[in-house]
Image (cartoon, rainbow, N blue to C red; front, side, top):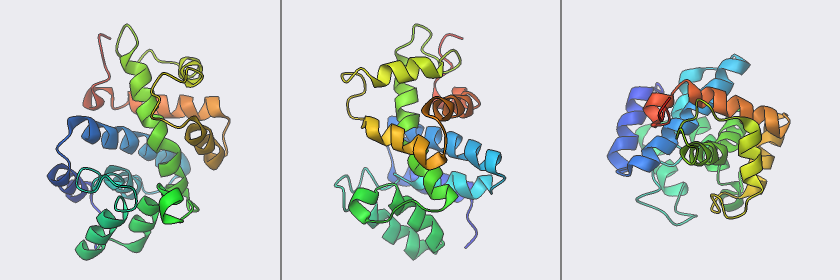
Length: 190
């Protein structure tokens, strides 16, 4: 099967009605594609993994069902095994599949951080990612009440998986998301 963004987007929108979950998928896609460009990898393939990593979440919100049930569906559609492995690795505490390949590491590194960057953007006076800086995101990480559902250790582990200092990883993800500010609803008043 040829992996295509168009087919992945169609599947995501068929299974995911929540606008915020769709935007999360787009934010993770923007970040993962950015790392694909940096590493000279196949941006389309990495983007598909990012788009589909939570596509089954509305139907199967229970960890264990998600992402396993979604991967069963992808397998039935003929997606390559590496796609399912990457998606399963983003829930390694449930699936036992540790991120090893570059795309797996990028997905894990960008998943929670993309959501955190989105939240940090939306509380700015500008409501924009365009004027957000890494130091502001890192400062927000210390505030346990801010985006409390995001485990801080996941953000730190993501930078470690990418082999980068936290500030550099955050700067990269912000930069990648800025390129898609309009589609992410993060242009704000700028």
